[in-house]
Structures are given as C-alpha cells and as structure tokens.
Image 1 (cartoon, helix red, strand yellow):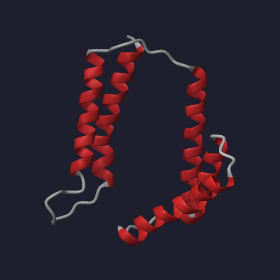
Image 2: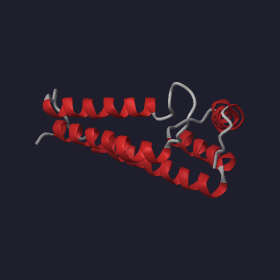
Image 3: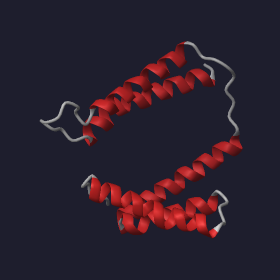
Length: 139
C-alpha cells in the first residue's frame, strides 16, 4: 500500500469521524431557520469522505515523508494543544494572546508592530466577534 492510498484512507476516516461523531455531538439543533447549523459542516464532511475515497482509488504522484517538515508539524500541533489547554484553564482572554505570541515567535516573527497586532488586535477582534456579535461564550 502506498502512502497515497494511506492518506486517502486517513482522509476518508477523518471525514467519517466528523460526520458521525464530531458534528452530531458538537452542533446545536434548532427548530427555526431554513438552514440548520449542521448542514454546512455535514456537506464539508461528505466532501472530505468522497475526496479521500477518490484519492484511495485513483492515487496520483509520489508521496514521500519529509521528517524535517513532519517534526515541525508535530511541534505546531503540540503548541496548539498546549494553547487550548491554557485557554481552558485561564480563559480565552489570557490564553489566546499567549498562544499567538508563542506561535509568532516560533515562526520567526520579531517585528514589534506585527507582534502587537497578533497579540492584541487579533484575539480582541475574535473575542468581540464571537462574544458580542454572535453572542457565544468563549472559554
């Protein structure tokens, strides 16, 4: 089995997990409106499953694992998980700027004005849009 076929299987399994576990368990149900909250996520999950199956049946190109890039991806995944844990413990207001600072420093950003935008403006704008405009609480 080639890496292409394996990636197709993993993509299809991810789509199935979204379709049957994540979306039903983490989407509210409503009795109003013409578009239910789970409609667009379900469409996206079906597209992911179909795309994974097509890639499984008709693999194209050569897939190789670059361990340097894989290590970097795992580093960012670990930073993201730690950031989510921090936000669950300290809240979004404190956790999001810390997560943004760490991610920006790891990617090599050292300009103060960009750091300020990433640490202050982006989390504040996210908080404003979600909390005030959408009326949804953040952790």
